[in-house]
Length: 456
Ligand code: BGC
Image (cartoon, rainbow, N blue to C red):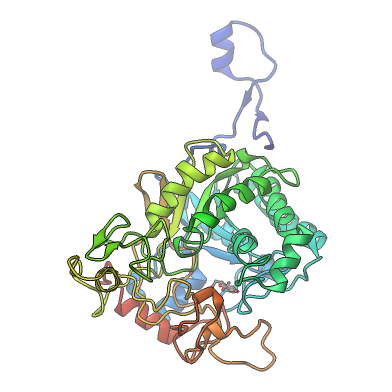
C-alpha cells in the first residue's frame, strides 16, 4: 500500500490544449518528488548519496580525511536517536539529517532502522532498549515517529533507503529451537512473533511513502549460505512482508553483510573448485564446510534470483552489500590462489582473502580493511555496494564496562575461545574496543591501513 503522491495543482495548459476540453484541475506529481518506489527500481542508480557530517567529522579527526566524504548510513538505533542522534559519535536527529541532505543537494539518504523489541537476541553487544513484548512502543514511538518526519512534504524529493532491522529475522532461523546455536532470547522472539510483526509494520508504514525504498536484512553468506538456512530465511522474510499491513511491493530488495566482514568477491577460489582430496565444498575445507557460497556477491545474487522468488517475492528485485569493512587488503592478503594440487584445507586457507579465524566471527575483526567504495549497480542483481556500518564505530566492548547501556558479548573479547555459533574458535576481535556504536580509533586506523582498494 502506498500513499498517493498525486496533488491537485490547478489548470494545466498542456492538458487543456491536448483535450480541447475545459478542465478545472489536473492531477500531476509535484515537480521535485522522488519517483515512486516500485519493484525493480534501484534507488542508487544515478543518485548522489547523503554524506553524514557527524561521521565525516569523526573520520576526519581520526586521520581519515581522504575518505571522509564517503556516504554512510544513519543508524536509528533507539527512540532517542530519532531526535538527538544514535549511540556513539552521532549527534544529529533524523530531521536534521534530512535537512542537511537537501542542503547537500543529495538525491538519497540511507537509514538503518534498528530497534525491535528484544533486539539482538543471539548476542549481547547490541541489546536494545525495548523489552521482548514492547511491540506497541516500537510501532508508535519508533516507526510512527520516523514516518511522521519522512512524510513531511519538504522531504518528498529525497529518496529514503531503509535498511530494515539487521540480524533479526536470520536469528529466528538459526538461533532457535533444538539447534545447538539456539538462545532462550531468540526462542522467545520467535514464539511471540514480535520480530515478524515489527518488520512488517516497519515495511508497511514507511513503505507507504512513495520515496521510501526498503531493504530487508539477510545476514551474510557465512550465516545464511547453508542449505538449511537459505530458503527458510527467504520464506520468513516473505511472511514478514505480508504482516501488519506490509505487502511484498513495499520491499525493494535485501541487504547482505551489514556490519559484517565477508568478502564481496573471493578472487582466488570458487565453490566448485576441487583440490587433491576432493571438492572443497564437500568436507575438504573447514572454512567452506558445505556452504553453497564463498562470498557475499554470489550469495546475494542467488538470494534475489532463487530464494526470494521461490518464497513469493516478485522477480527483478535487488540486493545491496555492505562493503565498509570487507576489503581485507594489507600484508596478509594472498596475491593469488593456493596450491590446488594439495589438500583442500590448505588450498582454501592459502587462497582466501577473508582472513578471519572463522566465518562466524563478527566483532571488531583483527586485520580487516575498508572495502569497495560505494558504487551503484556494480553487478547483476546488485543495486549497490554501500557503506552501511560507519567505519570506526565499534561492534562491541572488548571487556565488561560497568553501567554500560548495552551488554558485554564475549565475541568481542580477544581472549574468548568461542561458542557454538563460531564453532568454538577464538573471537578474532581487537582489544581495547568501546561499546558498540562508539568510536574505536585503533580499529579505524587498521581499516585504513588494510583498505582494499587502498586509500591514496
Ligand atoms: C550499535 C548501534 C550503532 C551501530 C552503528 C551497532 O552495533 O548497536 O548502536 O549505531 O552499530 O555503528
